[in-house]
Image (cartoon, rainbow, N blue to C red; front, side, top):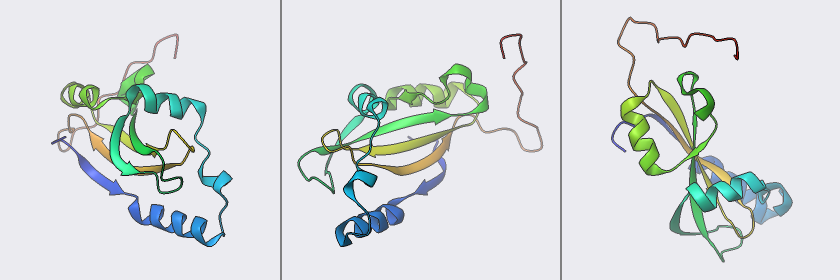
Length: 136
């Protein structure tokens, strides 16, 4: 996606967690704890990769994108496909995307990366605030 800004890669943290698991300092129950919601989101909204799970090595990892932002309203916190992100990038104010890798077999999950998408605010201009309604 061309509009990605402020990209943060969590691969060093992932490597440290996996080293702790292999050395026995961290138990599998601590890292293979994907919630049913995350597993379901991986099934319906995720993108399967060719990367094998680093824990069970039986399944391929799935990447799931979650969006968060003030201007997103009820959409904030939902899982989105790559196609949905591309549409949102052109139509929405700035929002954050968090990509989580998930193994649907053993439950391994880890934050893979985060980045910002959406229309950048103009320099010197405050972001537009959404008007509060009686239901807010």
